[in-house]
Image (tube, rainbow, N blue to C red; front, side, top):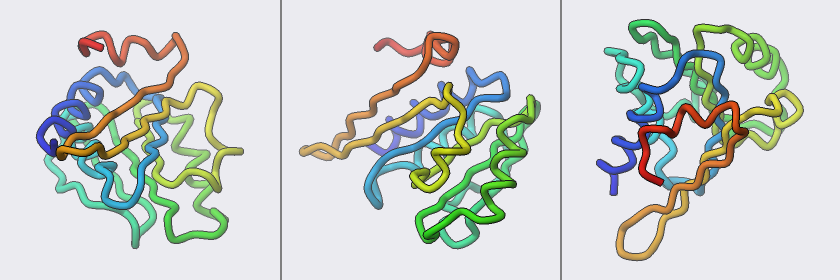
Length: 144
């Protein structure tokens, strides 16, 4: 289960060109950070990936892209972090990933890729991607 989530994130990360925005939707412990860890592998970062629940934002620098990972779990309102998010969204060499994005839906662009991770019985996860056609290239290597 964990390794599959990592591999899936890696395939998606490898396909990123920059400018993509992802919203991860899952319960606590559902696999969001594992997916991001895989994406970080895909952009070829040497950085250790951890949940930004306490720091709100972690930055991972890859060979050609930067991955900005936001987690709004502990916030009632985004405040100044929404401004930082807004700036990162429009950087062409940056991939943005948002966890617990309900409080920043007004900031997220219309072409945000939504990744819903649902743990299932028998220690598996169902991962569903919702995206606009313009982002289909991210999933061309997946057999879905």
